[in-house]
Length: 382
Image (cartoon, rainbow, N blue to C red):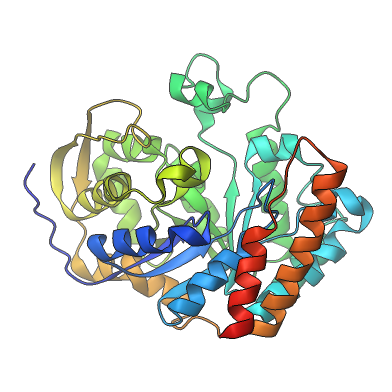
């Protein structure tokens, strides 16, 4: 297809994964090629490494004006002292902020995480101190809550989702509507909480419902990270989608999930330019072009079918500027926080010890303290 993209300013990607410090060159190469001038690394827990925050801060130290970091929480709090988890997480938020994180990333709302971890209800008294601290600090949160609604329906769930273990309708996973209600209760208690819900809050098929939430909670934002189902839903009624984007142009952030494949499926390949470009091209063609367009993916990771047809909504350039970078600057910050290297060193030392303990107590889950040690050595010498 012809490349008729019209926006020529730099992008700020609010949602990029960075599984390992050794992927620095491949990530920066992909971002440079795709016009992503600034990037926000979102950190998720890691079974062997425990935390990927040091990797993200290592990247940030190399590109201090270009890289933002949303740190992942210490999920061991849910196991260690379950009745005090909220208090521990509140302390964790303060530490992450002091260390140089610009916000917090929560993957705890993904159903498989709720099944894997003893996470209390989000609106429980246990987690109340955490939400209170987030509100007090005005710490931006990027939260993955739920998944596409068809993942709970055996007749509608796509085959590729079943292959990845993302069918949730067997009664052993949290109900998506229960999770929505829990978070709405949190927002009603903390209406000034700064939150970005990833993947359009998984309500791309229910735009009037999402509009009502955005109207009720003025600090709620959403990002555009695919889920391919989002763009199928948008294309099913492109005019309604365009009207929504115009009305809520100040509440939508550009994000791609670049690095997700390296995190979930192929870490040995690093950040792949082809797969990353498919993400950016889908979003940009949807936002910038008018009428039908086709994309032929090669990576096979993002798209459910080998060929998909979509409909673009041709947003005005002033709206694109908001979505592509201004909304993040306004809601989060224009300039990344500086790094406290002493705290990063202390955190790496803590991780090294925890990984060694985990490795000895759980032989089936081998830890690797090497990366944390390497990052510690780096910060001790710069």
